[in-house]
Length: 345
Image 1: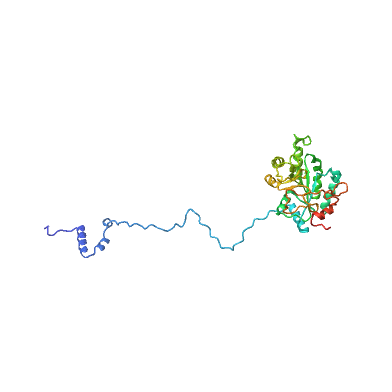
Image 2: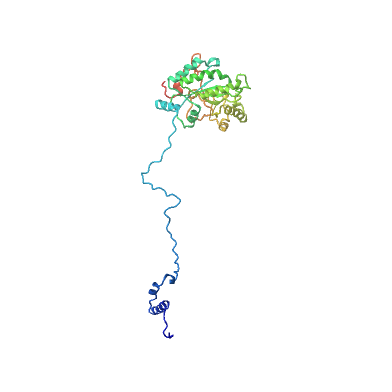
C-alpha cells in the first residue's frame, strides 16, 4: 500500500480528534470521554479543621434545675433544755428575776460552833431543805453562780446559795445530805479542804474513800465542787506567792481526783487577802466567799457583784432555837424577806 495512504487505527484516531477539539476549545468535553485509566489523578484539597464542640464528653453535664422560690436559710435548732434549766425558767416565769440572792454557810449537817449560835443537826437540816422546797426557793449551782455574777444568766427571784465547807471529816454528812437534797430538789456548792483527803494523809480516807464519796455526791446532781484551800490558813496573813502555792495545790488535787475545775473558793477563816483580784483569775477561780464583807443588812449576792472575790455569807438558823447567828436572832422567814426577792415582809 502506498505510504501516502496511511491506515489509522483506533488509538491514532482518538489522538487526532483530541488535537482537533483542543483547537476548538473543546478539551473538557474530551476529558469527560476518557477511559478511567487515561484520567489524571486529582490533587487532594485539604479539609478545614472543624471548630464544632463534640456533643458528648467524659464530663457529665449538670442537670437542669427548675427555678423555684428562694427559701429562708435553715437555722440550727437550739439545744434542748435540761430538766434543771426548765425548772429555773419556770420559777422565773412565776416569781420574776432575782436582783439579789441569799448566801448561806454550812459545815455539813451536823456541827456546833460559837456556843451553838452557829450549829446544825440532821433534823434541823431536813426542816430547812423542806422549807425551801415548800416555798419554791431555787438553790444555785456553781455554774449558775458564775453566770449570775457575770450578768449572763438570770436566777429566779427566790434564790439561795447553799455552800458547805467540806473535807475528810464530811463523810457522814454527805451520806445523809444527798438523799435529802434529792428529795427536796436542793443543791449545794461543796468547798473542799483538800489536806488529809488522801489515804496516805489520814486513816479517815482508806482506799480513796473520801474522793470517792465526793465523786458520788457530785454525780448525784446535788453537789457542785469548789475549793477551801490546801492548808486552811488565814491567807490575808500571807503573801501572794504562798497563796499561789496553797490554792494551786488544792485546785490541782480536785482536778486530778474529780476531773473538774474548781471555779469557786471559800476563804479559810473568812480571810480575804489584798492580792485576791490579781491571783484568783490565774487559777481559774471565778468567785470566792469571805464572811461579813458588807454591812449585815446588805449581805446578799448581786448580779455583777463588785465583791465577787470576797462575797458575804450568812449563817443558817441554828439547831437550838432555829435562829441565825449572823444576822443574830433572825428566823429563816425573816432572812428570806431581807435577802431574797419574792417574799413579803
